[in-house]
Image (cartoon, rainbow over all chains, first blue to last red; front, side):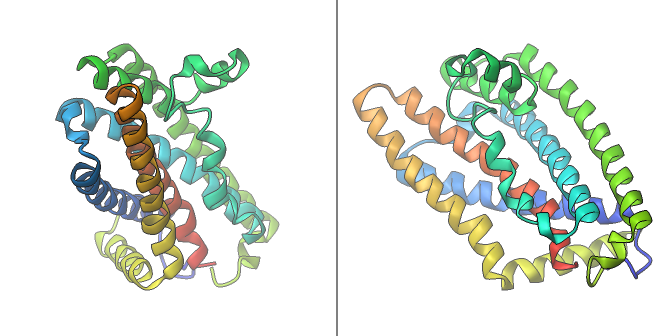
Amino acid sequence: MFITPIKVSEYLLAYSLSGVAKAFVIFFISSIAINAFFHYDIFSLGMIPLTVYIINLIFFSFSLGIVILGLIFRLGTRIQAFAWGLLPVFQPLSAALYPISVLPVPLQIMSYLLPPSFIFESARYTLKSGGVQWGNVEIAFIENIIYFILAIFFFNYMFKKSKETGQFARNEGS
Amino acid sequence: MRTHIIKAILLQELFITIKSFEVIFDIVVFPGMSIIVFGFLSSYIAGSSNSVLGHSLLMGMILWQIIFIIQYSVSVGSLWNI
């Protein structure tokens, strides 16, 4: 693809948009199915909290996706399993299904480094009491901005290194 | 940023997504199965203790799928071209 006059920014933006579009399609289908079969309406969280949570989760996904993409460009397809296999490593730490407090203390510290942990904590609070833990949302937002900037720098560095070492040319077909 | 290039990649992504069993399984079938498993698990928990706990499991799974699908799309997209 990179024999075409495409910019890296266009490439990243296009794949990010594609990811968001797919995620929204699956999200709406899942929401309808869960409402129909399991009688739970995720929209009962409220549109504002849900939107805030989803935006934060989207930015975390971008950051992680871009970091993995950088690694794939730099190290080649031998680490392609990272593309679908690295995220599950973060799942126990991001407290998607249980509160952070159930984790052992060392893992809690690692959990607090992940923006989704704060989002899931706030989402559970919304589910229970209807409010939003804006403090948690702010921390997640700040972490997301930091990670997103770092991810872009990391990707650019890996992309540059990939060209310098010749790995970019060895990535067949690119 | 040139929109025609972004549109071209999006079109390529659309064709790959609807034609590739790998992608369909990864972003539709596996998340779908997870949601079904967690749906029944939450129904079981809601029946035995409280519905908030059951619903929080379902909510966690739905929101987690967003992270998975976007990260997957951004990272795996490159593999179709290299």
